[in-house]
Image (cartoon, rainbow, N blue to C red; front, side, top):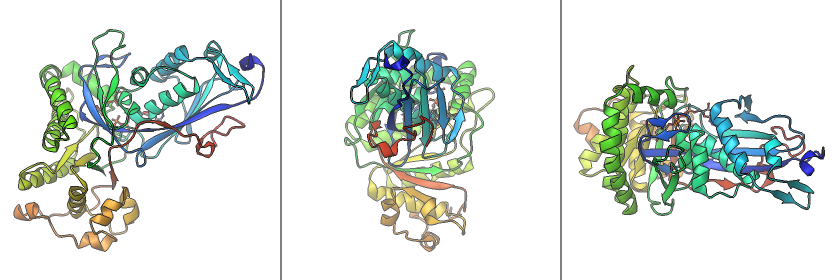
Length: 422
Ligand SMILES: Nc1ncnc2c1ncn2[C@@H]1O[C@H](COP(=O)(O)OP(=O)(O)OP(=O)(O)O)[C@@H](O)[C@H]1O
Ligand SMILES: C[C@@](O)(CCOP(=O)(O)OP(=O)(O)O)CC(=O)O
């Protein structure tokens, strides 16, 4: 058996996985260990071209223990969540053979062979940009490929779920629903794709990164406190979310932007309301977040119908979904008027991602931002104050595809000789 022959081969797989933003939020667990939620949730997968995790995983008979490097630093793999994912994957591993390289690994070998995991997020980690979602989904997806796990994506989503709840939704592109399930063992708590990213490709997403610092209350402990202390969360999970899930599925199927926006904004606001209803209260949004909400609400009201939806996860960053490109350029102009960069900023790093939105907005250098006129709805309300430097930067993106394997060896993060990070 090659796995015990003392040979020094290193077998590796590299994958790229997107992050996702919930438009009907997951908040609250009924089982902490298995990560089973108290309600269904729906998300939009974000284009991995702009926000993604890349993970290389490798196996070799020379590895002595399981190890993980995250963003260039070795971190502990001993946490229960990592261990649960590894155990679930190993139990589903199947025989693998590469005749050319003389590598043969049997199902039983996988139990003894150790793995190296090297992962990199191209955006801030633990800053409310769902790094755990992309990260854990990528870990499960890449290891499943390496270990020749033959389960379908819904089964893989149930494994990723045990790494971080929201990770189960990053196994697919487009529009995704996490079904809470009823079983105690979590077998029916899986993610399914509602529609792929091409279904509604008019949508343009602008993220205002208000703070990329690590947050005070993690989602995990925040939602635990909410379930223990909030009366409102029970009403939300039982009465409000089931109805919203149906309506949101319908809005997505029909590409009905007004309904989509109404539901997404209401659900984000209710999620932050249950955070406030928690003891001690949790404040994820700040003054800048509130100003962004107010800017969108005023504009939507002025137009008589929703142009943009906003949603905020467990942090102050705004995710703004506009109905089309034209609206996105008008939105970016409004945002840049209200939140201009510091005078020494570099425009290229102030608006990142899909730069064509910036170009369409007629912004070619910092002077163009200074020259922006206030929009009619803020002029009417005499709210023309500018909040320089209150937004760190903007990311322009769109709905995107699900995980992919990167076959090109040059994209691997692992040295094929040593099995260590490159
Ligand atoms: N690429 C990755 N590979 C493996 N684990 C990761 C990766 N990226 C993040 N994680 C894990 O996720 C943790 C961060 O999760 P956390 O929920 O605190 O922040 P977040 O996901 O950025 O924010 P949120 O989920 O509230 O949007 C990290 O400490 C790490 O354990
Ligand atoms: C506000 C949210 O982003 C909460 C995400 O929570 P996590 O998935 O990070 O929590 P754990 O399951 O404890 O890892 C809403 C959502 O993504 O649905």
